Amino acid sequence: MILIQLTDLHVRPLGLAAMRICETNVLTERALRAVRDFRPRPDALLITGDLTNNGLIAEYQNLAEMLARLIDIPVYVIPGNHDDRANFRTALDHLPGVSTDPEFVQYTVEHLPVRLVMLDTMIPGQIDGELCPRRMAWLDRTLAEQPNKPTIIAMHHPSFACGVGSMDSILLRNPAGFEALVRRHRQVRRIICGHHHRTIIGNVAQAIAMTGPGAAQVVDFELFTDSPGMWVLEPSAFLVHVGLDDGSLVSHAVLVERYPGPYPSVPDRD
Ligand SMILES: [Fe+2]
Ligand SMILES: [Fe+2]
Image (cartoon, rainbow, N blue to C red; front, side, top):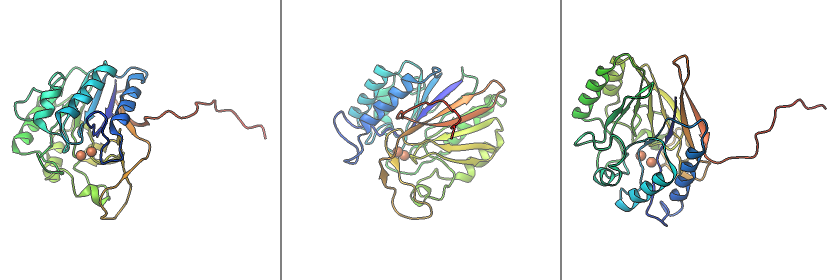
């Protein structure tokens, strides 16, 4: 099983950059081409929130056009804080699961060797996220349905701190409540998030928790400062979650851009 996770595309209307310098449309198209060309062919593409920068219908339409043109594997999406839930549903209604729940964009994917639980952590107008009582109850009930199947939870907002001030101020609210819930459901193996635009690995109870790198723009790495998150034009990347034959799950970070090589590993004769 191969799952590709792109996150934080921050797509803009055609022809416009994000925050004046981030050409997110070009970068998203390039990331989607990397997914299209990835071999072996992935089982699915997951996009973990902040699909657009301003939640505009024109932005979702631009993304929908790129997905339709470039991607022919199942695409599973969830919203982030930059999204607008109503416009998200309107423009991406054709994607599986998007309209399953009447209020939130939350659903499960059951046909893969690993069960996917796709969560909606957005609070309209807020940068941080939450699982309100209704969403917590849905998650608890949903995980209880399949206690023995290895499970990945996908959600935009991470709940674990990482030491970067600008990131640790915009996490999931009530991380202790979420951790206690995950601890009760031992089949949860991975929690895959977006939001930070960097690859960061931590844990939530027994599960490895990680944030995916920016598939478009990247946030600067500033440990133990309280400066606002700044953008840097570092190479963009994505995660490849692989289920191996022995039942284990591994995750690779892969750069979007291709570099010279590969070259054979040969001894130097001097
Ligand atoms: Fe983002
Ligand atoms: Fe975000």
